[in-house]
Amino acid sequence: EPEVTQTPSHQVTQMGQEVILRCVPISNHLYFYWYRQILGQKVEFLVSFYNNEISEKSEIFDDQFSVERPDGSNFTLKIRSTKLEDSAMYFCASRVSSAPSTDTQYFGPGTRLTVL
Amino acid sequence: GENVEQHPSTLSVQEGDSAVIKCTYSDSASNYFPWYKQELGKRPQLIIDIRSNVGEKKDQRIAVTLNKTAKHFSLHITETQPEDSAVYFCAASNSGGGADGLTFGKGTHLIIQP
Image 1: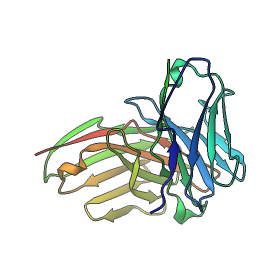
Image 2: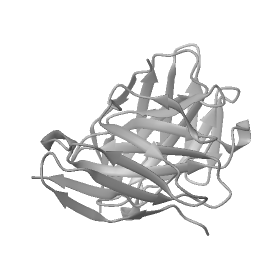
Image 3: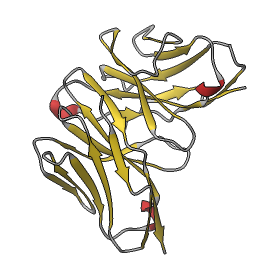
Image 4: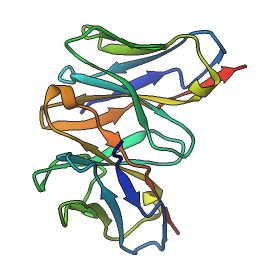
């Protein structure tokens, strides 16, 4: 069964550095998402992306964050200048379409970001 | 924006007994309510979901009920087994409305006692 994949599984960076987290959504999916989960806390929505543009973003998704679909398979999250509080597990998710019977968002395995 | 409250935060039940986890939501425009199971260090996995035009849905030992008027929905697990031990998250979204980012509850740590 196809799955969402993410790389790297763990990223360690220094405060102030830029990081790019990569995701490969399921191949026929059209909607893409990023979520984060601070250790021991709930999953929080960051941003959704469709047709090469952001369709929704949360308050967390400020100017330090950006997303891109650079080619037909990858979906990336960039954090321009990391802060200690950006340390979290970042999950990518994808969904096949907007039809009511296709609501399911499938999550990737996550990238654990540690900012030192 | 949407706010989802989830209770209890921890639930311990004897193997074979039933477990019930409850969630409430605030946005009446929400129409999609999934439940995810997350084992330690792993990705959230969808276990069941329900749309607002349905009051109840069942899949083997798992069922979800939705009360739109009261804005609450519940997960029911019957005949619990050790492999049911995990953190369970409820979520809500306005699916199909262009704003379908999931708002999650804080999670319930379900412990199945042998």
